[in-house]
Length: 210
Image (tube, rainbow, N blue to C red):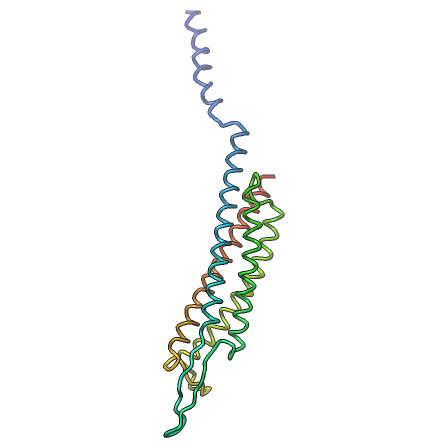
């Protein structure tokens, strides 16, 4: 009987051993966190490349939106009128804002690529700077998109109360250009918003880890 009683505790101990050794070592947790931050840094880099592409294409499409039409003003009298982005201050601001966004995304994209090459990805200090600058640029691009969208809507539909005539029934190519450009600007704004969210998420993870 004594031999059976002594064998039971040994069996219980052997049953508990796998439970104690099942947890991964701290070094493995650190490796998982490093790979996670590296993945976020790669996503950040790709988003900034995408932002650069959308901003550049948006500026090019808006700048090349010039169109000339022959407008009849009286019987037998026709004048030549040209519609281009520089005729509207909102479109000029739009081009300036998206040009700044393209330059900013180029600079921060290079910084993000350099950060990907470093162990651990982007640092908390860099992410903090990204949050501030991305939020600032998001406000600039969103304001330019809204202002240009308002002017574009008047050109598309007109405003009978203010006696502003629509022009898209005549300048169809010009209107197609600015509609495509504003759509790309909206995509750029959404990309900046995702970048802000990503930076805040990674920054919160880095703070919680300390």
